[in-house]
Each structure stands twice: as C-alpha cells, then as structure tokens.
Image (cartoon, rainbow, N blue to C red):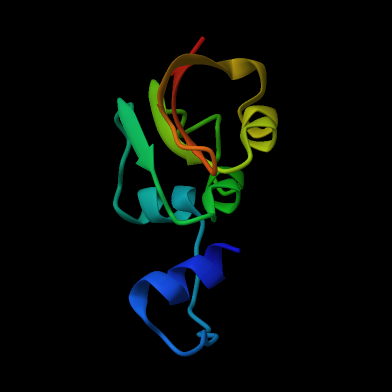
Length: 104
C-alpha cells in the first residue's frame, strides 16, 4: 500500500527495484570514528526503521533519545527492549506514529 500511494501521489507509472550496498548504522559510526555518546537519533527511512535499528550495536551506540517514525510500534518496542521507554508520542497519523524514546 505504501508503494501504491507513493506512485499515485508522484504520478509515476510503476515502481522499480534498485540494488544498493548497505551497511549497519554501527558500521557507519565506527567508520566515522564516533566515540562520544549520541544524544539524539532521528530515524525516518520510509519503512526500513526496523532494519536500521537491528543494525545498531547497543552496547556501543545507544543514543540517549531516539525519534522514530513507527509503522509497526510493537516490533520497534521489541527491538528497543527494556533499555528504552516512550517519552512522547509526537505524531499520530493512522498509518504511522512519530515516537520519542528515552533510554532508561
């Protein structure tokens, strides 16, 4: 449904597949030499939020706050586990929510 809506709104005739290299967020942070604590991670990757969150080494890169566009809140809460709690529901739009999580 997400793809269909996007095609309609952008007046595109069809979708297509593109293969791109991918790395985990922790791999990117390591490459950039990020060693300080991360205050805020803002995550809106058009439905790929679960994959991004699964690519974080939580022992080394656990932000104090995470703002995430959630299309599947229970799965995101499962990934964040007991280390995070919801601080605020910022937006509630039916298809998704923008959630602010705070590290416990």
